Figure 1 (spheres, helix red, strand yellow):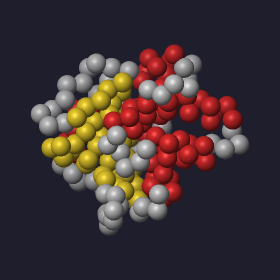
Figure 2 (cartoon, one colour):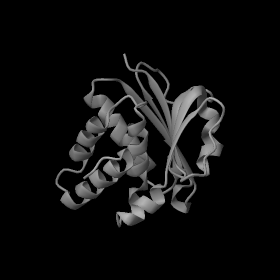
Figure 3 (spheres, helix red, strand yellow):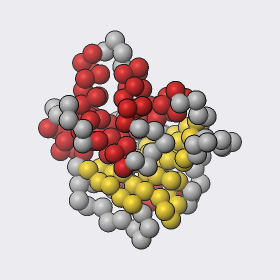
Length: 177
């Protein structure tokens, strides 16, 4: 059975809860149990938002420090803040350009999602670009195609939003659209 614990981190307004829901819906579509929890008290003021996602047979939704398989960071500075959640062999997918220095045992993949989002004409696309980068690492419990299906399901009936979302996800995975 699939078993994975993830931390998704950013600031209010970046779409942390949206990509958490996408990943949860992807797990549900695969028939795998999923738990989520998030803290977003200061989200309205651009404060830090952190989402916990557990896929598999877990009884508590919170990821304990030192137990996360992966960290998806939408804001570069949040890697340092939430790195303590990672296992020694954990991985990071981050919006960091070239500014991230990985720890001793971490696999880190960065992408300049802010610049790519501006090139796409969609500054709000940072979340899906970084999620795409995480998917391209091949360490998530799901594939890019499975998340693509979740995006299509969630945004059906909203063609302009759907096309923007799919373009952002493809930009993160490196796929050509």
